Length: 349
Image (tube, rainbow, N blue to C red; front, side):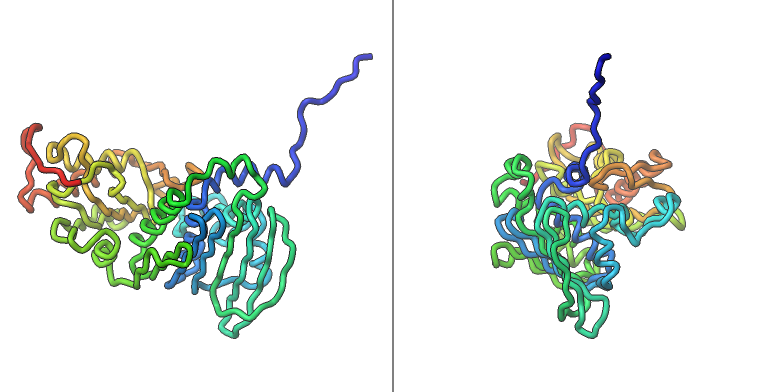
C-alpha cells in the first residue's frame, strides 16, 4: 500500500498575519500613512508624528481625535475589525480614508506596538501593548481624549524584510512625503513632524488650501499658481491650484491629486493633467498641481490595491475630460493658449 503524504499545509495564524502585513506595511512610511488615516477619520484637528531612525526604530503618532473605549481598543487589534463599513454595499459609499480594518492588526504583527487611547474628557483611558501581534498587557491609565500609537522595532520578527529598508534619510523622506500629502488634503488640521527630537515640519491649522500650499511648497510659488474651480454636476467638482507653464519641475512628484480627500496616483488622472498642458511644456517637464476631485463615492471603486492609491472609475473618459478641459479653461484666460507643438517654454528646476 502506497502511503500518501500531503504536500499542502494550512499555515499557522502568525505566519498568515505576517504575509498579510506585507501587503499593507512595506516600510515605515506605510505605517505613518495608515495611522494618519486613522487619526483623520477620528476627527483629529492636531496630529503629532514622531520618528526615530527614519521610523525604523520608532514611529509615534498622537492625535486629539474621538479616541476609543476599552472594547473598541481591543477589537482594533483584530483583523478586519472596522467601524467604517458593515456590508459590501458600503464599499461604494465610502467617506472615510480607512475601511478594511487591517492597518493596526498588520502593523502590530510586525512590530512592538503600544496603543493608548481615551474616548472621554474625564482623563481615563486604556493602554494595550502587543508584540508580534500578540497582546501582552492591558491597563487603565490617565489619558486625555485622543489616541497615541507607538510602533517600535518595525520588522523585528522579519529580519529578511528588515534588511530591505533603506538608509535613515531615505525612509525619513518617504515618511515626510506622506505627511505632505495628508497635510495638503487637510489644511484645517495641524501637523507636526519630529525626527530624532528635531522638528522637521510644523504646520498650524489653515483656512484653505492656498495657505497650506504656501506653508509646504513655498510662498514664492503662489504668484505662479492659478485657482481651479469647476463643478460639472451636483456630485462632480474639481478644485485646486495649478502652475502657469513657466513653473515646472523635472519630475511628476509635484503633481498632487486627491479624490474625496484621499491622495491617489492614478494613470487616468495623471494623463488628464498632462493633457491639460498639451503643447505648453517642454519634453520632460512637469507642472506643479494640487487638485481635489469631489465625486459621488458610488462612481468609484477605491478597493483596488492595498495602498489605496489607485481607483477605478465608472465613467473614466468623463473624469479624464473634466480634468483636462478644466485645466485648459484655467490656463486660457491667463494668456496661455494651445499653440504649435514646438512652443518654447522656459522650465525651472
